[in-house]
Length: 204
Image (cartoon, rainbow, N blue to C red; front, side):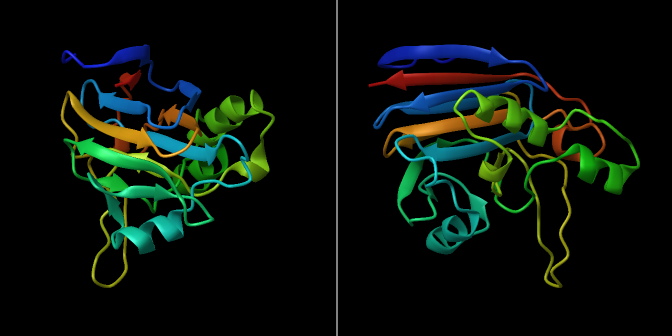
């Protein structure tokens, strides 16, 4: 880990398949590091003061003018207000389209029942804040690459992140942040081998 400036409020390694949640205060920084490479991180965020205002994928794509997120992009709420700004990004491709895996979609796509999945991780993390199924929306997938072909076809492709790649975000208000370190083994979003990530929250 690089020597980071400011005060570190949390520094935690999240095992593969685990989840994490925290309110990141306005102005504080959230850094997510892919420790071994090609590991997808599913991410949701909400206005902590009123979680009915939450990340909106469509507005985020429209207002940034791209289906991929990278440095300089903002994660917008359904009120078109920024929740996070991406300050630094060493990967360059973060998905807004693919959503989270679920036991149900894994069964339809891969014929396997009762698989670990990001939707269940989100539900476990949200429950601690009094939120549930109705609060899960289309999410960001950090480090996941979902290219779209000219004819509209899309597929989850091999991840492009390398060991040590990170994305750092600044909270533009107090933001409830939820992530699932994706346990998927049936498509290449994790290189078919889920690995740990590191989460750091700090204030300058």
